[in-house]
Image (cartoon, rainbow, N blue to C red; front, side):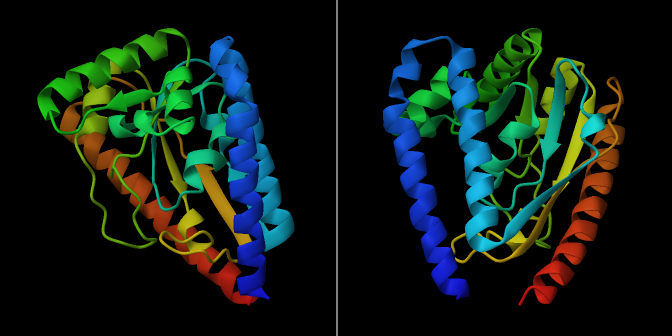
Amino acid sequence: MLFLRSILFALAFYLTTALFLVLGSWLLFGPRRWAMEGLRIHGLVSVWLLRVIAGTKLEVRGQHHVPKGACLVVSKHQSAWDTFGLVPLFRDPAIVLKDELKWIPFYGWFCVKFEHILVKRERAAVALKTMIADARDRAEQGREIVIFPEGTRRAPGAPPDYKPGYVALYEGLGLPCVPLALNSGLFWPRRSLMRYPGTIVVEFLEPIPAGLPRKEFREVLEARLEAAAQRLVEEGARSRFRNK
């Protein structure tokens, strides 16, 4: 039954996503806020499908820690779930993504429409300056700047691999930073079609104020984020065991 439910969810999810992209393509020519609302609805529908078909629920903690205005959000990244499941939790997120995604038909076009922050990773120094400039522009619009500091999905419990881009954003933006821990990879594993019942927990941690020295900020952020992520992974593992 677990495998069957996973296949049924995959069919429903990818069909729904395709319909949103194709039938919603007219949003490419409207205001950005309309397209962002479509992105938010897609996230809500996908989270609902996951709960109804696969039995994977969502619990959000600490959302009150997210400021009303612009801020930097530094998030763990364990699963493809993070790319849509987190979107409805923000007012108007601008997500740091790799530039190559913009060439994907429909999906990439919408990434440009959403005014996400697209980074060319092959030219590190130039890319860093461009990323900070784009992030400042989005922050001036009052948007949340969301970055996955490890750059790619990491298995739950894997040793951390933080890249320096998030520190550059912290220094360049001068905004409070909200660490975001999660355990999505337990229930939506990378490189797998299996979707496991249980509860994905997303936890916004207490903001780190702007203006800390680089070394202190990095140490505080990584210590808090890794401790919270490990706690959620342990909690989620128990949840998966109970739902076997």
